[in-house]
Amino acid sequence: MIELKNISLKYGEREILNNVSLTINDNTIKAILGPSGVGKSTILKLMLGLIKPNKGRVIVDGTDITHMTETSLYEIRRKMGMVFQGNALFDSMTISQNLGFFLRENMKLPESEVSRRVTEQIQFAGLEGYEEQLPESLSGGMRRRVAIGRALIFKPHMILFDEPTAGLDPVSSKKILSLISSLRKNNNLGAVIVTHILDDVFNVADSVAVLYKGEIIFDDVTDKLHEAQHPFIRSILSDKILEL
Ligand SMILES: Nc1ncnc2c1ncn2[C@@H]1O[C@H](COP(=O)(O)OP(=O)(O)O)[C@@H](O)[C@H]1O
Ligand SMILES: [Mg+2]
Image (cartoon, rainbow, N blue to C red):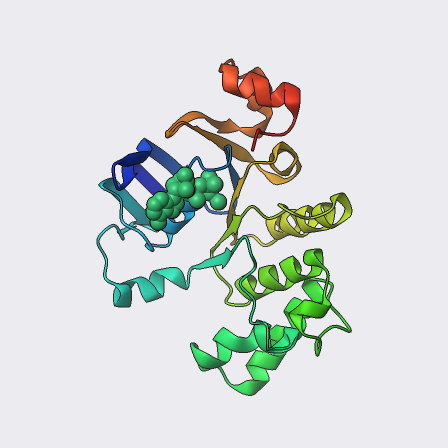
């Protein structure tokens, strides 16, 4: 479980988050919806301890990580898989090498276990036959699936997605969303999806928080979004996609 408690954050003089509180429960998929530049990626960075808030606390599985050092954060980060917006794959490594990299280099797992887990993720992500290809020879949707496989291969408790369908065509988006939905079947895995695309929310999220001008203006089960009265939410529901 991840909790943000009364978080305020500024970049220089500019206030990005103003007293934001959020809870991400285990075994659920939570979306954080908001327009571009509102602070969604910033929230994921706070959850990973990559940046520190000016006020408030970040709690992961009951541990206050707000002021933890990098060394202590290592164990916490292993509980969370992250899928970056640009995928962050290693260009010079094959798909198999990308998937296995952290298991070999950081976790020092034996080669037999690395290979077992790589095969498992290749199957899960539907990448059979592409094991020895370089990322550049894959489509955008496939590269995103490699990034998801690489985040899952640690067996994290929680997986964080930064704009999982941004820049993908409708068919690839659908594949990514169904892959994310299939994570629900894994009883021990929760997910956070930050997005500016309303379809992502309706397709996969159990609950959704809407971030607007530094504040959470809605936080409830996804079905209730239709009943929200806030003018910003009314406008995105009628336009279907947020203004960039
Ligand atoms: N390290 C930084 N220093 C200064 N400003 C930043 C930094 N990172 C992000 N910003 C700004 O803060 C705002 C929120 O950024 P971000 O969290 O990336 O938004 P989102 O992911 O919702 O598009 C944006 O206006 C962005 O330009
Ligand atoms: Mg972002």
